[in-house]
Length: 203
Image (cartoon, rainbow, N blue to C red; front, side, top):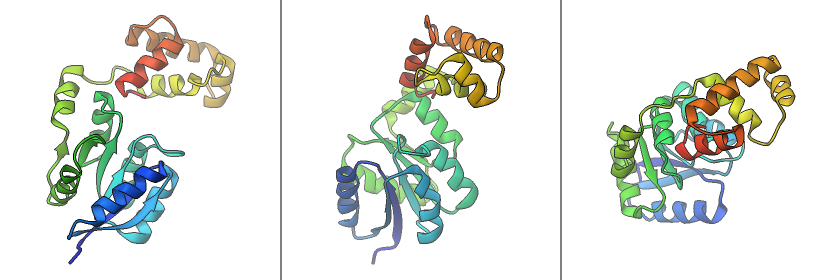
């Protein structure tokens, strides 16, 4: 009898279908909803009432990390398991802060994934061991929420004036935040700062 209800959020159709098929082959797991964008996660969770939400991080619209935080508020009974290609220490730290119960990388065996689904349902926290060690040695994210926001807004090559208008800040304030972020990431300019912050999973 299938008794573990799973919601799957993955933007790549082939990967989503494969995961649904593999999990569906388990005797006790049923994939009750599949979504391809972060914006659809909360609505699907409220409609289908899954026990576990399996979320990719990089999704169109809302990221899996932001969706995890939303689920904690709006569907607190649903346990969140992050499944990503990007095993970055900063992502792990942010996932835990958002209330995720587990964090796995996609190149692990499917048996491990099914087992992780069962384990988070019993209240365990399941984290890829190598990533957990890397996160401990990497230390916390040095960027403030505002610095992250300004870096993110400038990531597409936007000018200081564009970023200031978008975030309702003065241009001098934006420059100060960018300068601080460049210093904290040990880079030479904002393009490098964005790249480094993404590499570390801080953005």
